[in-house]
Length: 383
Ligand code: NAP
Ligand code: G4F
Image (cartoon, rainbow, N blue to C red; front, side, top):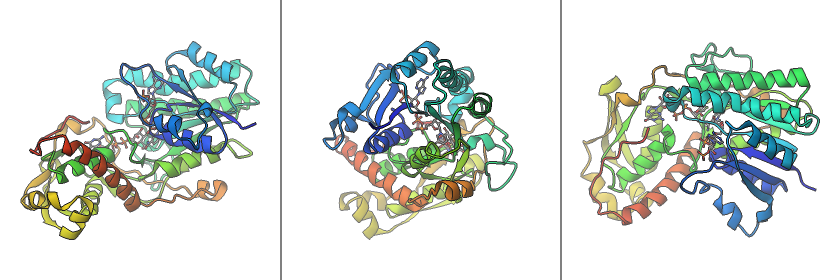
Protein backbone atom coordinates (compact mmCIF):
# COMPACT_ATOMS: atom_id res chain seq x y z
CA UNK A 1 0.00 0.00 0.00
CA UNK A 2 1.28 3.43 -0.92
CA UNK A 3 1.59 6.21 1.64
CA UNK A 4 -1.14 8.74 2.36
CA UNK A 5 -0.28 12.44 2.28
CA UNK A 6 -2.34 15.47 3.22
CA UNK A 7 -1.42 18.74 1.51
CA UNK A 8 -2.84 22.01 2.80
CA UNK A 9 -2.60 24.71 0.13
CA UNK A 10 -2.93 22.10 -2.63
CA UNK A 11 -4.43 24.67 -5.03
CA UNK A 12 -1.32 26.88 -4.79
CA UNK A 13 1.91 26.79 -6.80
CA UNK A 14 3.81 24.35 -4.58
CA UNK A 15 0.73 22.27 -3.76
CA UNK A 16 0.16 21.62 -7.45
CA UNK A 17 3.73 20.46 -8.17
CA UNK A 18 4.00 18.46 -4.94
CA UNK A 19 0.71 16.61 -5.43
CA UNK A 20 1.73 15.50 -8.94
CA UNK A 21 5.16 14.45 -7.65
CA UNK A 22 3.70 12.37 -4.79
CA UNK A 23 0.97 10.75 -6.90
CA UNK A 24 3.64 9.65 -9.37
CA UNK A 25 5.48 8.09 -6.42
CA UNK A 26 2.41 6.03 -5.59
CA UNK A 27 0.95 8.17 -2.81
CA UNK A 28 -2.71 8.77 -2.25
CA UNK A 29 -2.87 12.55 -1.95
CA UNK A 30 -5.57 14.38 -0.02
CA UNK A 31 -5.77 18.14 -0.33
CA UNK A 32 -7.58 20.89 1.54
CA UNK A 33 -9.14 23.50 -0.67
CA UNK A 34 -11.11 26.60 0.23
CA UNK A 35 -14.62 27.18 -0.93
CA UNK A 36 -14.51 30.02 -3.47
CA UNK A 37 -17.14 31.70 -5.62
CA UNK A 38 -15.19 30.73 -8.74
CA UNK A 39 -13.31 27.51 -9.53
CA UNK A 40 -9.90 27.61 -7.85
CA UNK A 41 -8.42 24.27 -8.89
CA UNK A 42 -6.88 25.35 -12.22
CA UNK A 43 -3.39 24.31 -11.16
CA UNK A 44 -4.40 20.71 -10.33
CA UNK A 45 -7.26 20.06 -12.75
CA UNK A 46 -4.92 18.23 -15.14
CA UNK A 47 -4.24 15.62 -12.44
CA UNK A 48 -7.84 14.48 -12.70
CA UNK A 49 -7.65 14.30 -16.47
CA UNK A 50 -4.25 12.61 -16.89
CA UNK A 51 -4.86 8.96 -17.91
CA UNK A 52 -1.39 8.08 -16.57
CA UNK A 53 -2.53 9.05 -13.07
CA UNK A 54 -5.30 7.31 -11.21
CA UNK A 55 -7.84 9.97 -10.30
CA UNK A 56 -8.73 8.11 -7.10
CA UNK A 57 -5.26 9.04 -5.86
CA UNK A 58 -6.24 12.71 -5.52
CA UNK A 59 -9.02 13.54 -3.09
CA UNK A 60 -10.04 17.09 -2.20
CA UNK A 61 -11.71 18.23 1.01
CA UNK A 62 -13.22 21.60 1.72
CA UNK A 63 -11.48 23.32 4.59
CA UNK A 64 -9.77 26.36 5.97
CA UNK A 65 -6.70 26.88 8.13
CA UNK A 66 -8.74 29.06 10.48
CA UNK A 67 -11.17 26.21 11.31
CA UNK A 68 -9.70 23.88 13.94
CA UNK A 69 -12.55 21.40 13.98
CA UNK A 70 -12.53 21.08 10.20
CA UNK A 71 -8.78 20.42 10.18
CA UNK A 72 -8.97 17.95 13.04
CA UNK A 73 -11.83 16.04 11.41
CA UNK A 74 -10.04 15.80 8.05
CA UNK A 75 -6.83 14.53 9.69
CA UNK A 76 -8.84 12.07 11.78
CA UNK A 77 -10.62 10.72 8.68
CA UNK A 78 -7.46 10.46 6.54
CA UNK A 79 -4.90 9.30 9.15
CA UNK A 80 -2.07 10.62 6.94
CA UNK A 81 1.49 9.34 6.97
CA UNK A 82 2.72 12.80 5.95
CA UNK A 83 1.27 16.29 6.17
CA UNK A 84 2.69 19.09 4.03
CA UNK A 85 1.43 22.35 5.52
CA UNK A 86 1.68 24.71 2.54
CA UNK A 87 -1.48 26.77 3.07
CA UNK A 88 -0.81 30.42 3.79
CA UNK A 89 -1.73 33.98 3.04
CA UNK A 90 1.61 34.04 1.26
CA UNK A 91 1.87 37.60 -0.08
CA UNK A 92 4.22 39.76 1.97
CA UNK A 93 2.79 43.14 0.87
CA UNK A 94 -0.80 41.97 1.45
CA UNK A 95 0.16 40.92 4.99
CA UNK A 96 0.57 44.61 5.88
CA UNK A 97 -3.10 45.09 4.87
CA UNK A 98 -4.39 41.92 6.58
CA UNK A 99 -2.00 41.34 9.50
CA UNK A 100 -4.47 39.65 11.86
CA UNK A 101 -5.79 37.28 9.18
CA UNK A 102 -2.22 36.47 8.12
CA UNK A 103 -1.27 35.67 11.73
CA UNK A 104 -4.34 33.46 12.08
CA UNK A 105 -3.76 31.44 8.91
CA UNK A 106 0.04 31.35 8.74
CA UNK A 107 0.82 31.26 12.47
CA UNK A 108 -2.11 29.68 14.32
CA UNK A 109 -2.96 27.53 11.29
CA UNK A 110 0.29 25.64 11.84
CA UNK A 111 -0.52 25.19 15.53
CA UNK A 112 -3.93 23.75 14.55
CA UNK A 113 -2.24 21.07 12.41
CA UNK A 114 0.30 20.14 15.08
CA UNK A 115 -2.28 20.07 17.85
CA UNK A 116 -4.70 17.97 15.77
CA UNK A 117 -1.98 15.36 15.19
CA UNK A 118 -1.14 15.35 18.90
CA UNK A 119 -4.76 15.13 20.12
CA UNK A 120 -5.56 12.38 17.60
CA UNK A 121 -2.59 10.40 18.97
CA UNK A 122 -0.95 10.30 15.54
CA UNK A 123 2.44 11.56 16.72
CA UNK A 124 4.13 8.20 16.05
CA UNK A 125 2.59 7.86 12.59
CA UNK A 126 2.30 11.28 11.01
CA UNK A 127 5.28 13.32 9.80
CA UNK A 128 4.76 17.06 9.32
CA UNK A 129 6.45 19.45 6.90
CA UNK A 130 6.07 23.15 7.69
CA UNK A 131 6.51 25.66 4.85
CA UNK A 132 8.94 28.07 6.49
CA UNK A 133 10.51 30.88 4.56
CA UNK A 134 13.63 32.95 3.94
CA UNK A 135 11.49 35.96 4.91
CA UNK A 136 12.36 34.95 8.49
CA UNK A 137 15.86 36.38 7.87
CA UNK A 138 14.37 39.76 6.87
CA UNK A 139 16.93 42.34 7.91
CA UNK A 140 19.70 39.88 7.38
CA UNK A 141 22.15 39.26 10.22
CA UNK A 142 24.54 37.16 8.14
CA UNK A 143 25.40 36.65 4.45
CA UNK A 144 24.63 34.06 3.15
CA UNK A 145 21.79 32.88 5.37
CA UNK A 146 21.85 29.33 6.75
CA UNK A 147 20.02 27.29 9.40
CA UNK A 148 21.92 28.97 12.26
CA UNK A 149 21.48 32.58 11.05
CA UNK A 150 19.39 34.61 13.55
CA UNK A 151 15.92 35.66 12.34
CA UNK A 152 14.81 39.31 11.98
CA UNK A 153 11.33 39.27 10.37
CA UNK A 154 10.24 42.42 8.53
CA UNK A 155 6.52 41.94 7.83
CA UNK A 156 3.37 40.60 9.49
CA UNK A 157 3.77 37.61 7.15
CA UNK A 158 7.29 36.91 8.35
CA UNK A 159 6.34 37.35 12.02
CA UNK A 160 3.44 34.90 11.59
CA UNK A 161 5.78 32.43 9.87
CA UNK A 162 8.26 32.88 12.73
CA UNK A 163 5.61 31.69 15.19
CA UNK A 164 4.92 28.73 12.87
CA UNK A 165 8.64 27.92 12.69
CA UNK A 166 9.11 27.86 16.46
CA UNK A 167 5.85 26.05 17.29
CA UNK A 168 6.98 23.32 14.87
CA UNK A 169 10.34 23.07 16.66
CA UNK A 170 8.59 23.15 20.02
CA UNK A 171 6.18 20.29 19.19
CA UNK A 172 9.11 18.27 17.89
CA UNK A 173 11.01 18.73 21.14
CA UNK A 174 8.05 18.60 23.55
CA UNK A 175 6.14 15.66 22.05
CA UNK A 176 8.85 13.90 20.06
CA UNK A 177 6.99 14.60 16.82
CA UNK A 178 8.51 14.23 13.36
CA UNK A 179 7.92 17.88 12.53
CA UNK A 180 10.32 19.76 10.24
CA UNK A 181 10.81 23.23 8.79
CA UNK A 182 11.88 23.72 5.20
CA UNK A 183 13.27 27.26 5.13
CA UNK A 184 12.70 27.81 1.44
CA UNK A 185 14.05 30.80 -0.43
CA UNK A 186 11.93 32.28 -3.23
CA UNK A 187 10.88 29.74 -5.82
CA UNK A 188 8.95 30.48 -8.95
CA UNK A 189 7.48 28.76 -11.99
CA UNK A 190 4.85 29.18 -14.69
CA UNK A 191 2.33 28.38 -11.92
CA UNK A 192 3.53 31.25 -9.67
CA UNK A 193 0.76 33.56 -8.45
CA UNK A 194 0.38 36.54 -10.81
CA UNK A 195 1.03 39.16 -8.12
CA UNK A 196 4.52 37.96 -7.13
CA UNK A 197 7.27 39.91 -8.81
CA UNK A 198 8.67 37.29 -11.22
CA UNK A 199 5.28 36.30 -12.62
CA UNK A 200 4.12 39.91 -12.75
CA UNK A 201 7.22 40.60 -14.85
CA UNK A 202 6.99 37.57 -17.17
CA UNK A 203 3.30 38.26 -17.83
CA UNK A 204 3.82 41.98 -18.38
CA UNK A 205 6.85 41.54 -20.66
CA UNK A 206 4.99 38.99 -22.77
CA UNK A 207 2.09 41.43 -23.11
CA UNK A 208 4.41 44.33 -23.98
CA UNK A 209 6.08 42.21 -26.69
CA UNK A 210 2.67 41.30 -28.12
CA UNK A 211 1.44 44.90 -28.05
CA UNK A 212 -1.38 44.35 -25.55
CA UNK A 213 0.24 46.30 -22.71
CA UNK A 214 2.19 49.53 -22.96
CA UNK A 215 4.33 49.55 -19.84
CA UNK A 216 4.66 48.00 -16.41
CA UNK A 217 4.82 49.75 -13.03
CA UNK A 218 7.04 48.16 -10.40
CA UNK A 219 8.07 48.68 -6.77
CA UNK A 220 11.59 48.41 -5.34
CA UNK A 221 13.88 47.42 -8.24
CA UNK A 222 16.99 47.11 -6.07
CA UNK A 223 15.98 44.35 -3.69
CA UNK A 224 17.75 41.04 -4.28
CA UNK A 225 16.28 37.57 -4.21
CA UNK A 226 17.67 34.04 -4.40
CA UNK A 227 15.26 32.52 -6.94
CA UNK A 228 14.90 28.82 -7.69
CA UNK A 229 12.35 26.71 -9.56
CA UNK A 230 9.37 25.33 -7.60
CA UNK A 231 9.80 21.95 -9.29
CA UNK A 232 13.21 21.59 -7.62
CA UNK A 233 12.00 22.87 -4.24
CA UNK A 234 9.05 20.51 -3.77
CA UNK A 235 11.51 17.60 -4.11
CA UNK A 236 13.34 18.99 -1.07
CA UNK A 237 10.05 19.00 0.89
CA UNK A 238 9.63 15.31 0.15
CA UNK A 239 13.24 14.47 1.04
CA UNK A 240 12.97 16.32 4.37
CA UNK A 241 10.21 13.94 5.47
CA UNK A 242 12.09 10.80 4.35
CA UNK A 243 15.04 11.24 6.73
CA UNK A 244 15.68 9.13 9.84
CA UNK A 245 15.54 12.18 12.12
CA UNK A 246 13.38 15.30 11.92
CA UNK A 247 15.35 18.49 11.23
CA UNK A 248 15.18 21.96 9.64
CA UNK A 249 16.81 22.79 6.29
CA UNK A 250 17.55 25.85 4.17
CA UNK A 251 16.67 25.34 0.50
CA UNK A 252 18.24 27.89 -1.85
CA UNK A 253 20.39 28.25 -4.96
CA UNK A 254 23.12 30.47 -3.45
CA UNK A 255 22.73 33.02 -6.28
CA UNK A 256 21.11 36.40 -5.71
CA UNK A 257 19.80 38.84 -8.32
CA UNK A 258 18.11 42.26 -8.26
CA UNK A 259 14.57 42.72 -9.51
CA UNK A 260 16.05 45.09 -12.12
CA UNK A 261 18.36 42.38 -13.44
CA UNK A 262 15.53 39.83 -13.50
CA UNK A 263 13.55 42.21 -15.73
CA UNK A 264 16.53 42.80 -18.07
CA UNK A 265 17.15 39.05 -18.38
CA UNK A 266 13.48 38.28 -19.02
CA UNK A 267 13.37 40.93 -21.77
CA UNK A 268 16.63 39.58 -23.21
CA UNK A 269 15.11 36.09 -23.38
CA UNK A 270 12.72 37.40 -26.06
CA UNK A 271 15.24 39.65 -27.83
CA UNK A 272 14.34 43.01 -26.24
CA UNK A 273 17.25 45.01 -24.82
CA UNK A 274 16.40 47.45 -22.00
CA UNK A 275 18.55 49.89 -20.08
CA UNK A 276 17.69 51.29 -16.65
CA UNK A 277 18.33 54.93 -15.77
CA UNK A 278 17.54 57.10 -12.75
CA UNK A 279 17.00 56.21 -9.12
CA UNK A 280 14.20 55.27 -6.72
CA UNK A 281 10.75 56.35 -7.84
CA UNK A 282 12.30 58.09 -10.90
CA UNK A 283 14.02 54.99 -12.27
CA UNK A 284 12.86 53.80 -15.68
CA UNK A 285 13.67 50.98 -18.07
CA UNK A 286 13.93 52.01 -21.72
CA UNK A 287 14.02 49.81 -24.83
CA UNK A 288 17.40 50.48 -26.48
CA UNK A 289 17.46 47.72 -29.08
CA UNK A 290 15.87 44.58 -30.52
CA UNK A 291 17.61 41.34 -31.42
CA UNK A 292 15.44 40.78 -34.51
CA UNK A 293 16.13 37.08 -35.07
CA UNK A 294 15.56 36.20 -31.43
CA UNK A 295 12.41 38.32 -31.21
CA UNK A 296 10.96 36.73 -34.36
CA UNK A 297 11.85 33.27 -33.04
CA UNK A 298 10.30 33.82 -29.60
CA UNK A 299 7.41 36.18 -30.34
CA UNK A 300 6.78 36.17 -34.09
CA UNK A 301 7.36 38.24 -37.23
CA UNK A 302 3.92 39.83 -36.95
CA UNK A 303 4.92 41.74 -33.81
CA UNK A 304 8.39 42.90 -34.91
CA UNK A 305 7.56 46.26 -36.50
CA UNK A 306 5.50 47.35 -33.50
CA UNK A 307 8.22 46.59 -30.97
CA UNK A 308 10.91 48.23 -33.15
CA UNK A 309 8.84 51.40 -33.26
CA UNK A 310 9.07 51.49 -29.47
CA UNK A 311 12.88 51.78 -29.27
CA UNK A 312 13.61 54.79 -27.05
CA UNK A 313 10.38 54.37 -25.05
CA UNK A 314 10.25 53.77 -21.32
CA UNK A 315 8.45 50.49 -20.70
CA UNK A 316 9.34 49.97 -17.04
CA UNK A 317 8.42 52.61 -14.47
CA UNK A 318 8.25 52.76 -10.70
CA UNK A 319 5.09 53.42 -8.72
CA UNK A 320 5.80 53.93 -4.99
CA UNK A 321 2.47 52.30 -4.16
CA UNK A 322 4.28 48.99 -4.60
CA UNK A 323 6.91 49.88 -1.96
CA UNK A 324 6.58 48.04 1.33
CA UNK A 325 6.56 49.72 4.77
CA UNK A 326 9.60 47.62 5.65
CA UNK A 327 11.56 45.86 2.91
CA UNK A 328 13.74 42.77 2.81
CA UNK A 329 16.64 44.09 0.74
CA UNK A 330 18.82 41.01 0.34
CA UNK A 331 18.30 37.27 0.46
CA UNK A 332 20.92 34.69 -0.46
CA UNK A 333 20.86 31.21 1.00
CA UNK A 334 23.46 28.62 1.86
CA UNK A 335 21.89 25.17 1.30
CA UNK A 336 25.03 23.17 2.16
CA UNK A 337 23.16 21.14 4.79
CA UNK A 338 20.43 20.12 2.32
CA UNK A 339 22.98 19.35 -0.38
CA UNK A 340 25.01 17.10 1.91
CA UNK A 341 22.36 15.48 4.13
CA UNK A 342 19.47 15.27 1.64
CA UNK A 343 21.60 15.00 -1.52
CA UNK A 344 19.34 17.74 -2.87
CA UNK A 345 20.56 19.47 -6.03
CA UNK A 346 18.51 21.99 -8.04
CA UNK A 347 18.24 21.26 -11.76
CA UNK A 348 17.23 24.75 -12.88
CA UNK A 349 19.37 27.91 -13.08
CA UNK A 350 17.91 31.42 -13.06
CA UNK A 351 18.17 31.56 -16.85
CA UNK A 352 16.34 28.25 -17.38
CA UNK A 353 13.70 29.36 -14.87
CA UNK A 354 13.19 32.61 -16.79
CA UNK A 355 13.03 30.70 -20.07
CA UNK A 356 10.38 28.35 -18.66
CA UNK A 357 8.26 31.23 -17.34
CA UNK A 358 8.60 33.42 -20.44
CA UNK A 359 7.79 30.53 -22.81
CA UNK A 360 4.66 29.72 -20.83
CA UNK A 361 3.46 33.32 -20.52
CA UNK A 362 4.16 34.24 -24.14
CA UNK A 363 2.05 31.25 -25.16
CA UNK A 364 -0.76 32.21 -22.77
CA UNK A 365 -0.68 35.89 -23.72
CA UNK A 366 -0.71 35.09 -27.44
CA UNK A 367 -4.09 33.48 -26.90
CA UNK A 368 -5.19 36.68 -25.21
CA UNK A 369 -3.68 38.81 -27.98
CA UNK A 370 -5.80 37.10 -30.59
CA UNK A 371 -8.88 38.06 -28.62
CA UNK A 372 -7.92 41.71 -28.45
CA UNK A 373 -7.70 44.58 -30.89
CA UNK A 374 -3.92 44.94 -30.56
CA UNK A 375 -4.10 48.50 -29.12
CA UNK A 376 -1.71 49.27 -26.30
CA UNK A 377 -3.23 48.98 -22.90
CA UNK A 378 -1.80 49.89 -19.55
CA UNK A 379 -2.58 47.30 -16.91
CA UNK A 380 -1.09 48.14 -13.58
CA UNK A 381 -3.48 46.75 -11.07
CA UNK A 382 -1.32 43.81 -10.06
CA UNK A 383 0.41 44.13 -6.71
P1 NAP B 1 0.49 30.12 -2.97
O1 NAP B 1 0.60 29.80 -4.41
O2 NAP B 1 0.06 31.48 -2.55
O3 NAP B 1 -0.53 29.05 -2.35
C1 NAP B 1 -1.07 29.21 -1.05
C2 NAP B 1 -2.11 28.14 -0.83
O4 NAP B 1 -2.69 28.34 0.46
C3 NAP B 1 -3.28 28.20 -1.84
O5 NAP B 1 -3.71 26.88 -2.10
C4 NAP B 1 -4.34 28.94 -1.04
O6 NAP B 1 -5.65 28.67 -1.46
C5 NAP B 1 -4.09 28.34 0.33
N1 NAP B 1 -4.69 29.13 1.40
C6 NAP B 1 -4.56 30.44 1.66
N2 NAP B 1 -5.27 30.80 2.75
C7 NAP B 1 -5.86 29.67 3.19
C8 NAP B 1 -6.74 29.37 4.26
N3 NAP B 1 -7.16 30.32 5.11
N4 NAP B 1 -7.15 28.09 4.43
C9 NAP B 1 -6.77 27.11 3.56
N5 NAP B 1 -5.94 27.33 2.52
C10 NAP B 1 -5.50 28.59 2.34
O7 NAP B 1 1.85 29.81 -2.21
P2 NAP B 1 3.10 28.93 -2.70
O8 NAP B 1 4.04 29.83 -3.44
O9 NAP B 1 2.63 27.68 -3.28
O10 NAP B 1 3.81 28.65 -1.29
C11 NAP B 1 3.45 27.51 -0.51
C12 NAP B 1 3.84 27.75 0.94
O11 NAP B 1 5.24 27.97 1.02
C13 NAP B 1 3.20 28.96 1.59
O12 NAP B 1 2.98 28.65 2.94
C14 NAP B 1 4.25 30.05 1.48
O13 NAP B 1 4.08 30.99 2.50
C15 NAP B 1 5.51 29.24 1.64
N6 NAP B 1 6.70 29.73 0.96
C16 NAP B 1 6.67 30.05 -0.36
C17 NAP B 1 7.82 30.46 -0.99
C18 NAP B 1 7.85 30.80 -2.45
O14 NAP B 1 8.80 31.46 -2.88
N7 NAP B 1 6.87 30.35 -3.23
C19 NAP B 1 9.03 30.55 -0.26
C20 NAP B 1 9.02 30.19 1.08
C21 NAP B 1 7.87 29.77 1.68
P3 NAP B 1 -6.31 29.46 -2.72
O15 NAP B 1 -5.80 28.78 -3.96
O16 NAP B 1 -7.77 29.26 -2.48
O17 NAP B 1 -5.87 30.89 -2.62
O1 G4F C 1 7.82 38.39 -5.45
P1 G4F C 1 7.64 39.04 -4.14
O2 G4F C 1 6.28 39.58 -3.83
O3 G4F C 1 8.14 37.98 -3.08
P2 G4F C 1 8.64 38.10 -1.55
O4 G4F C 1 8.12 39.31 -0.89
O5 G4F C 1 10.11 37.89 -1.58
O6 G4F C 1 7.89 36.85 -0.90
C1 G4F C 1 7.87 35.60 -1.56
O7 G4F C 1 9.00 34.84 -1.19
C2 G4F C 1 9.07 34.51 0.21
C3 G4F C 1 10.36 33.73 0.42
O8 G4F C 1 11.40 34.62 0.71
C4 G4F C 1 7.85 33.69 0.57
F1 G4F C 1 7.91 33.34 1.88
C5 G4F C 1 6.60 34.49 0.30
O9 G4F C 1 5.45 33.68 0.57
C6 G4F C 1 6.57 34.88 -1.17
O10 G4F C 1 6.44 33.71 -1.94
O11 G4F C 1 8.66 40.26 -3.99
C7 G4F C 1 10.05 40.09 -4.18
C8 G4F C 1 10.73 41.45 -4.18
C9 G4F C 1 10.39 42.34 -2.98
O12 G4F C 1 11.57 42.96 -2.53
C10 G4F C 1 9.46 43.40 -3.56
O13 G4F C 1 9.49 44.64 -2.90
O14 G4F C 1 10.29 42.16 -5.33
C11 G4F C 1 10.02 43.50 -4.96
N1 G4F C 1 9.09 44.08 -5.94
C12 G4F C 1 9.39 45.12 -6.75
N2 G4F C 1 8.33 45.44 -7.48
C13 G4F C 1 7.84 43.70 -6.15
C14 G4F C 1 7.34 44.56 -7.14
N3 G4F C 1 7.09 42.71 -5.63
C15 G4F C 1 5.82 42.57 -6.09
N4 G4F C 1 5.07 41.55 -5.59
N5 G4F C 1 5.29 43.41 -7.03
C16 G4F C 1 6.02 44.42 -7.60
O15 G4F C 1 5.53 45.18 -8.44
